[in-house]
Length: 94
Image (tube, rainbow, N blue to C red; front, side, top):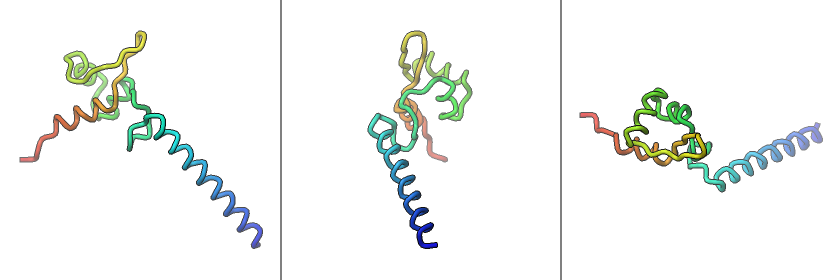
């Protein structure tokens, strides 16, 4: 029985090390802290991130309230700009 426990513990240690390496890699490649995802988001993903509709996010970008990053014909939004928009639009509950 002791051999099985040792093998199981070794397996858990190996899994933990792989998870830690994955997290370190994502943080080193520019993933914003706390999101676990890419820095640039599509309009659809940004809508989910903000809790808004796709159309609402398109309106925010078209009127210049949130800047865009354009690559070829695709439009992306920087998660830092989304976070800045959130902070700028916070209101205290009076």
